[in-house]
Amino acid sequence: MNKISTIMRPTILTASLGLLIISHVNGQSLKDLVSQIGYNVSIVLPGQPGYANATKPFNLRYDYKPVAVAFPVTSHEVSEVVQLGLKSNHTVVARSGGHSYIANGLGGKNDAIVIDLRNMKSITVDDQRNTAVVQTGNLLGDILTTLNEHDRALPHGTCPYVGIGGHAGYGGYGFTSRMWGLTIDRITSIEVVLANGEITTASETSNKDLFWAMRGAAGSFGIATAITFSTFPAPPETTIFSYSWHLPAAEAASVLTVFQNFTLTGDIPPQLAGELVITKADIRGNVNLGYAGGWYAPIAQLNATLAPFFAQVPAPISTSFDSGDYLHSAINLAGGSLQTISPEGTDTFYAKSLMTPSSQPMSLKSIQALMEVVSTVGFDTPGWWFFQVEQVGGKYSAINALKASETAFVHRDSLFVIQFYSSSPGNTPPYPQTGFNLLNASVDAIVSNNRPGWNYGAYANYLDDELPDWSYRYYGSNYQRLEGVKRIYDPNDFFSLPLGVGRRH
Ligand SMILES: Cc1cc2nc3c(=O)[nH]c(=O)nc-3n(C[C@H](O)[C@H](O)[C@H](O)COP(=O)(O)OP(=O)(O)OC[C@H]3O[C@@H](n4cnc5c(N)ncnc54)[C@H](O)[C@@H]3O)c2cc1C
Ligand SMILES: *[C@@H]1O[C@H](CO)[C@@H](O)[C@H](O)[C@H]1NC(C)=O
Ligand SMILES: *[C@@H]1O[C@H](CO)[C@@H](O)[C@H](O)[C@H]1NC(C)=O
Ligand SMILES: *[C@@H]1O[C@H](CO)[C@@H](O)[C@H](O)[C@H]1NC(C)=O
Ligand SMILES: *[C@@H]1O[C@H](CO)[C@@H](O)[C@H](O)[C@H]1NC(C)=O
Ligand SMILES: *[C@@H]1O[C@H](CO)[C@@H](O)[C@H](O)[C@H]1NC(C)=O
Ligand SMILES: *[C@@H]1O[C@H](CO)[C@@H](O)[C@H](O)[C@H]1NC(C)=O
Image (cartoon, rainbow, N blue to C red; front, side, top):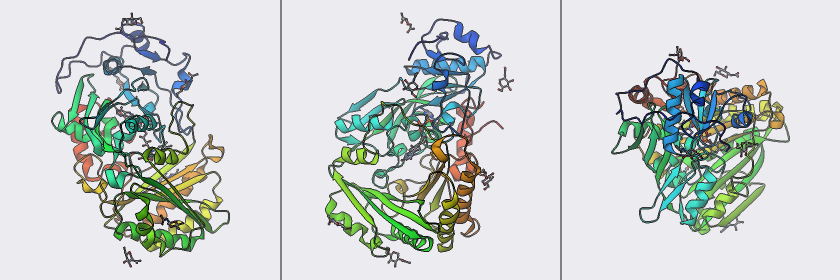
């Protein structure tokens, strides 16, 4: 990254929490502050070369113009930029992999200073303690590759380009998660830059409330610069499997109904997780279904594990099994490569999510209504869409072994997280109203055909800025405590985000 400008070096902060000595200096202009040379943080301002590239979101449905994008290389430099924000009266936002569904890494508005962490990519693996200290500019593909060199692994999603900052800030689900939990569940300590610029540690023994909040709602509380994880041995034998069907809506509904019962009541070992994927069929009134998943144990037991499900559904039209070591499974799930160097793509999309309560499975009527919508409205909707019914719960799920109050991530009794994702035709703007309509109608089919008060949640890593009661759906009974922690660590909502705890109204 070119050094385009430098910013001044402020005095070192020694203030302890609650005694903030740095305050807004009547909004000195950012340009003036940046021009006061003294410290070497790369920073790109509007009009400078690289600004357009540095502000391009993954989801092109958004087009935000932050006032600056900084590229610090140390946590001290992150602190310097936070203090620049305080002095210039601009909110500051962290960006890790830039894969927020609603471009939250750009601040979600046009007055933020973005702290892009891409130059902070160290990973330190401790083979004695079985921990890894991961700086938050790292992407999932690089973390997986590095840990695998030590025969270690962590639970997380499949896309190598997703950043650890957002992923480990709000959850982090993958096919190892019924066995190992969410990414946040493996965090033992976090180096955090606070809203006053102080660099501190959040763990069970230091800033306990902050540690709790950072595991589920990180972006509203501080900037994680390095995260310490407790790792697992990489499983030596794995299988990635997939099955597919092409079915009339009513039969597709019965497959999902069986899948729900199988996930809820089946004797499914934690080494298994997968998703039922719903996509557009060639014929109106039909849907395509796929069941894809991971099995992190010797293949011999896989068929027997899945047999109760397959006994109750039509024979699939295709089947595939790909066995190998853990790295092999991850490369398969990433679509062939874990490398993160080549230019990443963009999309133009809207997404919604539902986390379904285990204690209140979806009614048959609601599943039928969903399939009716996808086989008709979905068939008529231009562009590419997919819905994923991901297995998070069931017997032995490590995600649900924690109490709802243990971390800020509240959904410890969900059976599924369902992701509804619809792209624009050609994956480029403008985004059509038909995409919103399909997702609204699909979620509505489920919600309105369950009993009144059906207590569903939503997943904060699949952010939906149209969700009206978002604070309850994302955080449920934890939201009130989050607001309390916010008042202690960021009372002025300096880390302001749409759908962020304590956001400005
Ligand atoms: C192609 C794709 C595949 C995905 N697959 C999965 C999956 O399999 N499983 C799953 O659970 N999720 C998945 N997701 C969702 C993904 O986990 C979230 O979008 C995640 O928040 C992205 O993190 P990021 O760092 O790349 O994004 P960013 O846009 O950089 O950040 C997202 C949010 O986190 C905040 N943040 C980033 N870094 C920090 C930090 N260091 N400290 C504090 N706050 C920070 C940002 O301010 C922003 O609010 C996927 C997303 C995409 C686009
Ligand atoms: C800081 O910005 C906020 C909103 O952006 C504004 O309301 C406030 O007046 C500003 N304060 C100063 C000191 O400029
Ligand atoms: C800033 O960069 C210059 C030139 O690269 C270097 O000499 C100087 O030591 C750096 N200052 C700091 C504070 O890093
Ligand atoms: C644009 O940004 C990407 C990262 O998003 C970076 O890899 C690339 O080098 C940048 N391109 C230019 C021309 O600056
Ligand atoms: C649900 O699955 C269990 C086995 O896990 C089975 O005994 C039961 O019959 C199934 N219920 C229905 C309605 O299919
Ligand atoms: C599992 O079942 C499939 C058919 O669905 C079969 O092709 C495969 O050989 C079986 N695998 C094992 C290990 O038994
Ligand atoms: C989707 O539905 C919600 C109500 O559930 C509504 O508030 C929102 O405006 C709708 N969005 C669109 C784009 O139609």
